[in-house]
Image 1 (cartoon, rainbow, N blue to C red):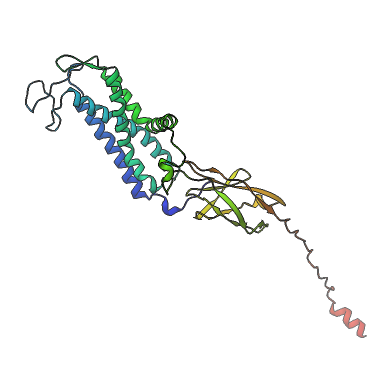
Image 2 (tube, rainbow, N blue to C red):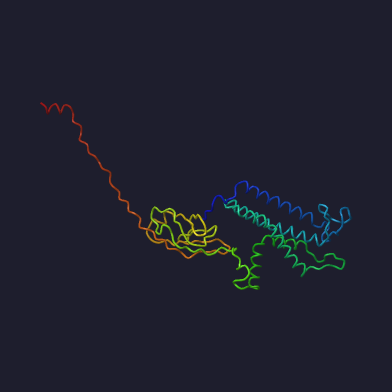
Length: 304
């Protein structure tokens, strides 16, 4: 079990604000999509001004078919991202693991979905969609296009990761070029354990301090493949808590530090020795025997 600092966890006010913001944004995007949808589809309304016959306006904005279609794709991409965000938000809040550092990820995720939906739309528009001689769109299945835009927003993480993998393979650079020259890397390194303090674990050992390099935020210690409570001090020091079962018998424990993604992974194991538990000798309680009381008659008889 990975234990993170409680100060990084979002409080009730932050959670309530984030949840309300997601709900309001979802309702706003849904209203925009309904308002932008052509009233007489498949015919798109022409551009114009407020009050012109056949022109469909939104808050004083009367776009033409191209601009309307582009706006609808962006709104659909944002709605798809909201679907992914709502599921993620519910999972992390339900498990009491919603961290403050992820708030900006939730804020920016809808915009990422919108941009990815627009990029996908431009490719589809250039290959499959055409315009007639008078500039009107033809052969546009709006339902399919909006559905694809929603999917693009919903799987924007997987899509961007796959595109990055594709372009890394097609446009591979030298190892010391590009991002490799930057001082601060985006990926977490693989941790390296130098030693443990104390070097051996005893039956009374509770916390073990590890020293090394490359300990990243969210690093997790595993003992014989099982997670333990971990407290990170900095990139060179962390501590973890042993369980009573770990030191019940003499032997060795395989201690591994696992850095979270991106990058990261398990370190080389450190073999931590466990001392022989001290035998407890039980001592039987001392029983004091008392002589029976002497009756007064018997004492008197002896004096006679």
